[in-house]
Every structure is written in C-alpha cells, then in structure tokens.
Length: 189
Image (cartoon, rainbow, N blue to C red; front, side):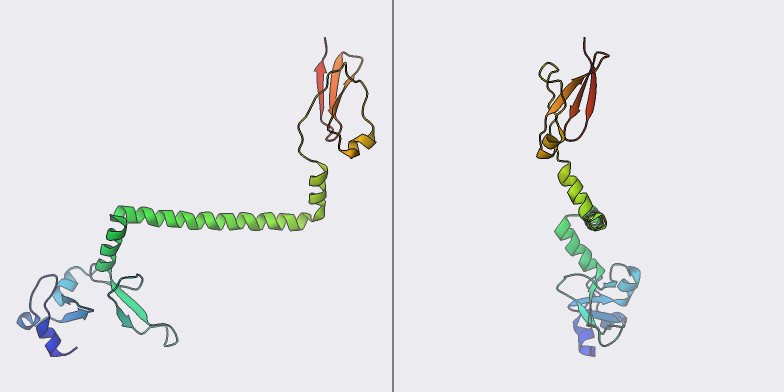
C-alpha cells in the first residue's frame, strides 16, 4: 500500500481525507476506515474468519504454512449479510438455536440407533427366536357354552389363536389363550 492509495481513499465512516488529519487508513478490499473510526467502534470493524462474503483479506494461517490461508471478513459486513438473509438479528439467533437443536437431535438419534444395534448384538438370536414365537395377536374369547375343554399342545404349536373358556366348581369362568397363556377369570351367574 503506497502513499498514492492514502491520498485517493477517504474513510467510509466519517468521510475524512487521510492527507488532512494524518491518521492511518486500512485499505480493506475497497473498504477504507480511518484509525479513529476503527478505534471508536472496534467490534464493528473487527475481522472475522468465517463467512461467505465477497470481500475478504487473505492472511497466512498462524498455525503454520501447511494450513490453508485464512480469509478474514469484517464483522459489520457479516452482520449486514445475516440481516439481509434472515431479516433481523433476533431471527438470526432463532436460526442458531434451531441448528443447535437439530444437531442435538441428530446426535440423540445416532446414539439410540447404536444402542439398539448393541442390544440386538448382545441378545443375539435368542431374542429374535423369542419374538417370532410370541407373535402379536388379537384375543378372541369364546362363550363357555361352545367348548369346555383345553386345546392340546399340538394345536398350540400349530399357531391356533383360539381362547378356550374353562368352568371350575366355583362358578368362575376362566378363559385362557392357547398361544400366550393369558388367563382371564370371570364370574358366571
């Protein structure tokens, strides 16, 4: 940056010519700011390293020459782009919270998926076999007058889903599922 640059540019914040007040200017990709304006509001003209803005300054990465060069952006331009995209700073904060919650939900779903896989792996084939034996079914109760006997074990294994009521001596009617063994006791009058 030569002296001709200083004489040609003026501060975009206050409009003062640098040749008149001898303050230092910072040429920032077409954005000139005098030293006084920069010191008056340092947060506004602070360089930030993230963003997809058009104007930036490339600097070598302080971590080392093997890393990519840093692209530094002005915070005020980044805020202007965010306000343009989201409408206001409050909506920008809402978007940040939404993204943070989305990340947390994703982590939780991945954790639950891994936990299910771990349970499946630790239980092995026993859980799968047990689940196939005990199928979901709708309980269907028969009247006591239709049948009073219990189905034999061969029909249980064949997959019959009938419930057979039993009568005992105390005027109780017991209905039992032949597959899952569920028993319901009812008083008969």
